[in-house]
Image (cartoon, rainbow, N blue to C red; front, side, top):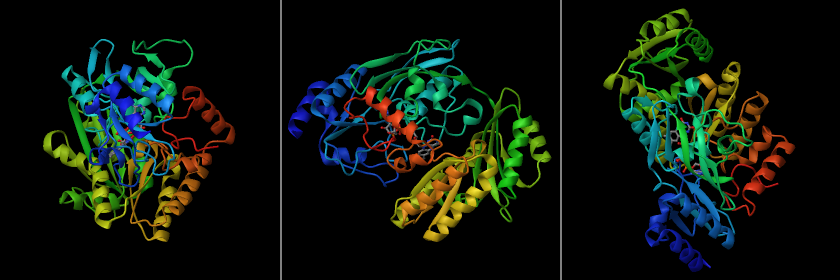
Length: 461
Ligand SMILES: Cc1cc2nc3c(=O)[nH]c(=O)nc-3n(C[C@H](O)[C@H](O)[C@H](O)COP(=O)(O)OP(=O)(O)OC[C@H]3O[C@@H](n4cnc5c(N)ncnc54)[C@H](O)[C@@H]3O)c2cc1C
C-alpha cells in the first residue's frame, strides 16, 4: 500500500519532491509550538495547480488524507498530520509555489501563488510603491495560502480587515480534484457563490488554495510607534477610543500585559523602554500616513486618562526596538516553553471591549488553579487576546473553563488562528447544532470522500 502511494505520487511530482525519509519529513510533521505532531506517508511538494489537482485525484482514488501546509506557523495543529488516524496521509506542501505576477498599480492588486510568504508579498508590493494590508510576526514563513485558510489577522486589521477582505480572486482545487475560482480580481461581480468568501477560514478542509488575487494598499512614509504604559485595561480601552476619534493614520493598537512585557524584555536582554511601576498594561500604537502623525497622536494621548509613560520613535532602529516588544513575544514564549519542557497552551480569543477586564481575571484564575504562568497579549482594537499558558498541566480543563466563559461573554473561541485540532471540541460553544450540520454538509459537497484535513475545524457528528 505505502509503496503504491509513493509510486503514484512520484509519477505526478517526481522523486525529489516526494519526501519519505523520516528525517526529511520531521519538520513538516510537528507544528510550530511542538504541541501537535503525527506521522505521514510522505511529504509532497507540488509546483503547479495541475500537479495539486492530480495529487488530489490520486489521493481520492487511494483513500489517502491530505493535510495542506504552507509555512507551518499555524498555532492550532491544523497543518500537521493527526497523531491518531487509521488512514494513510500526506502533507501537501505548497512552499515551492511562490511566484508573484501581474502587479497592477492602478487596480492596486497582485497575483501570488499560495506558497508565497507574507514578506515576499510585501517586498514585491513595496518595490512598486505600494504595501500589503496584512502583516504579523510570522511574515518570513507564513504563506498566502495559510493566511487565507486561517483568515489570518495581525496588527493592521483595525485599518484594513482580516485576510478575507484582501482576497479579490482565488484559484483552488476542491476535494474532488476540480479546479475552481478566478483570478481576474474584478472588485464588482455578482455571479453566485464567492469562492474567496467560502474558502477564507476553511483551514484546508474544503479545498487547497493554489493562487490568489490580492489587494494592495498605499505605502506611507511617515510612521510613528508609541509604547505606552497605562493604569489598567479600562484606561487602554479609553485611549483606544480617543485614538479612533482623532488619529486618521492609525495602523495598529496592540495590548501587551506586564507578564508578556517582562518575558520579551528578558528574552531580548533589554531594559523596558517605559516606566514600569504601577503599570496595569502596555499598549503598542502604530501610525502611518502621508503627513506626520505625531501631533494627532500626542493630542489623543493627552486627552485620555490613565496614561503613565510613553516611549515614541518615528523610524529606523529606535522604532524597530519598540516594535520588537510586539513582534518577538510569541518567540519569547516558545523559548521559555522549551526551557520548561512543556509546550505552551495558546488560546486565541476575542470578546467585546467592555468584557476584556473580566476575561483577563478569569484567565488568570484558570492559570492560578493550574499553577501555570499566564502571558497575555494581543490586538486590542479587536478585543483579541492571546492567552498563553506556560507550564500548564491540565490543558483541557483550562481550555474548557476559559472558552466557556468567552462564549458566555458573547466572544469567539478563535479570533484569528483558526479552530484546527486544538479547539474543534469546543466549536459547539459558539455554533448551534444546525449551524454545525450545515457546515458539515457543505464540506461533504466540496470534499465528498472527506480526505481534506479530517478532524480539523468541524468535529465529527
Ligand atoms: C511568531 C508567530 C506570530 C503569529 N502571529 C499571528 C498574528 O498576528 N495573526 C494571525 O492571524 N496569526 C498569527 N500567527 C499564526 C500563523 O502564522 C497564521 O495562522 C498563518 O496564517 C499560518 O500560515 P502558514 O502558511 O504557516 O500555514 P500552515 O501553518 O502551514 O497551515 C495553517 C492552516 O492552513 C491550512 N493551509 C495552509 N496552506 C493552505 C493552502 N494553500 N490551501 C488550503 N489550506 C491551507 C493548513 O492545512 C492548516 O489548517 C503567528 C504565528 C507565529 C509562529
